Length: 276
Image 1 (spheres, rainbow, N blue to C red):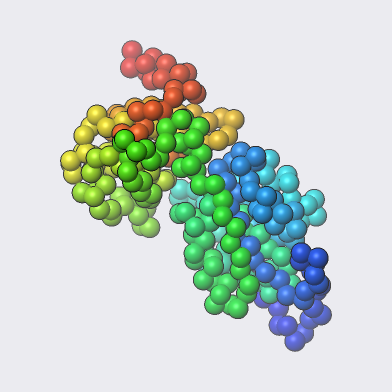
Image 2: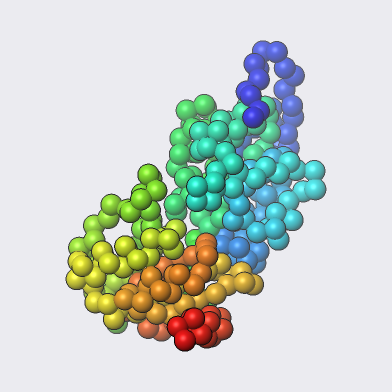
């Protein structure tokens, strides 16, 4: 773990930022998008190519990491369920320490930094340490998942609202959500990180009044070459989720009736074989 240096005991390192010489570092919270490198924004690409240090999530694709300078230091802080290589506090301290050492730090996150990406916590840590922090938005997974399946998150005739929720609480259990509100018809509910909680989530929504026949879509590895989709219903959400291993999104709503099978054909055949 890098430690902040006493500025009175070191020689300031000059870092080139946007053509200007600076003696202090900074942090960029960069959204890497859902995985397809062509969905990376130009602004994100410029920040990545100018980085001294890249602190990245496990969900950032190798194709995107390959766009960084060969000399940039890469540090994986992959956080998967029950397996954290670094705690969030350690990541916060790491970002601050590198920036105080005069380095240009890119915190590269899958999707968007501010959509269930803990970007807000890292921004606060930088502000508390008086470190400049900039945010570059990214394409969040829900947008890629719905676009790839041809199922709009909003639709004038069947989805007048869309809500993003998390599939698990901070403690790791069932999320504490307004189920009655989410159960109302003609809206889309996108559940991030909800694959393992598909059964209780579906049960909660149906108990609150959402019809079991409501169309649903599950997308694993949205936008990537190995993307897989399950087109199902709310009542079939748990069974569909059981066929996948993640990372995946659960999307429930009437507009999911427009979802195209695409990569689900082979998967659905597997499900049918499993039932036989």
